[in-house]
Image (cartoon, rainbow, N blue to C red; front, side, top):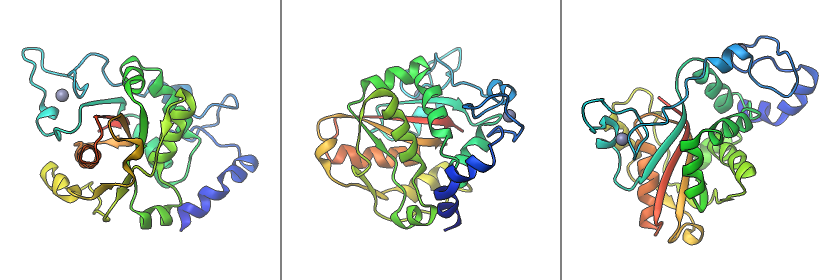
Length: 239
Ligand SMILES: [Zn+2]
Ligand SMILES: [Zn+2]
């Protein structure tokens, strides 16, 4: 409950204790920013030119993309804004577990400012955040993917439907699992909530971080089964 409790009071806390840089904690030069210049410069943007499907860099000599081979066929396209490097792991941790929701707008603006991500967002008809299991959402007090999704639609005017996907069962933390174990862990973990907003449409699936793509793949599978025309995956960070 601690996360939810703190999250509920964070706007109040910000008022009394102006927050430092979300990356390194140093005092910030001006109001209205979340990162110091050094942390901002430390963000490694995702390559603009890469595999047409997943966006990751491909070997010079061939067109073989190692990531795509393991991706669920239901995922039509993937883009991310930054690598999970430099200050990004700290930012994600603070956003996800410490309720630093002011980062959502920063993530959304940075993502929308990058051409490959912007093109992907423009293709979409409806934004669907990767859902948390209801129990985990209750304990955390929020779903960080939904907060990121809402920040994106505030910027782009797109439609959002957080009820389009449901996490049907809780899954183990993925951090210590191999790619194959991750796929097994999330297989069948998602089902469509109400298909109305996604049926026959291009869906933008939003999450904070992508590692192997197992979670996005399982979500894409559920969305396609419920009749989605195309499923595009967008994450702020890629590990
Ligand atoms: Zn900093
Ligand atoms: Zn690829």
